[in-house]
Amino acid sequence: MVTSQTSPGSDPLFLWLTGGPGCSGLGALLTELGPFRPNPDNRTLSENVFSWNKFANILFLESPRGVGFSFQNMTENNDTRWDDDRSANDAYLALKDFFSVYTEFQNRPFYIIGESYGGVYVPMLTSLMVQKIQSGEMKNVNLVGMAVGNGELNSIIGSNSLLSDMYYHGYIGTGEWATLAQCCNTTYQMLPFCPFDARYTVSPDGTAIPKDNTSACDNLIADKINNVWTDDMLYYSDVYNQNQDCYQQTSYLLGSIRSAKTRQKVAEHTRKFIKAQKDASVTNYVDAYRYNNDNI
Image 1 (tube, rainbow, N blue to C red):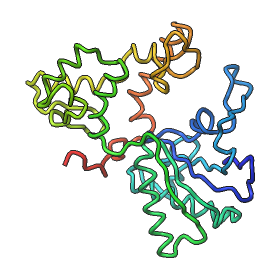
Image 2: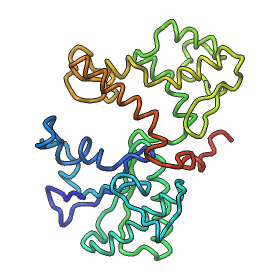
Image 3: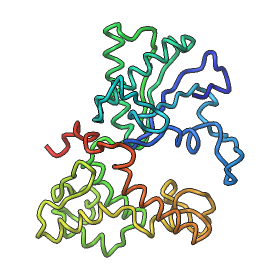
């Protein structure tokens, strides 16, 4: 937790949940909205002048259990399954303990905020908190609102929008775009609104699967969706700032690193991490999507 730099005794309290599922909140603390950033020497820190704790107290919570520095006592709880309902309940219990110990934050304006898979974490936890507050199980908590940035809301809608997003950011060429137009029962001008999802389903681990393995269109669309993280994208572009000029890239974000050798090393590491993330971060990763009825 980091306290507010302005009025820690009266400023609101933010709960931050990083996505994944299975990404540590420490990543957000040290590279996104926290007060300091580690320097390349791995020994010193630099101030983040855009830190959210300029005006709020921020609690970074690891979710689900077992992520980052969170700990599960297997003697007290030997449950080895993970799903969104369990994660929401674990977060609720953690907050209940937090407010009982740090009473100075009771009745303070409280917001639940997250990114990416926080599109699942945040509304589910918020809904549970509202129930607990209304039932009287959670007392002296002034839940004001919630916020989600770039949230995972629906796996099909989310992946369906990737094709037009990739085209308008230059990752799909006009030739490929024209080919995709032939796979859509609409005009070329309306292609961004094409229901590509009619040609694929999404597996529990997020992989697009062609509905008809013999259809060239179904296979093309599924292939494009499954290969968003291409070598060129990781080598030469900054996924956090896709519109910047590549020849001016100087930051240390994924693909935007000056040394080509370093770019390649980072790209290979990132690709391996993404591929292995579902096994490394959350042991029973598939269960994290069981709540999702997108394909029904």
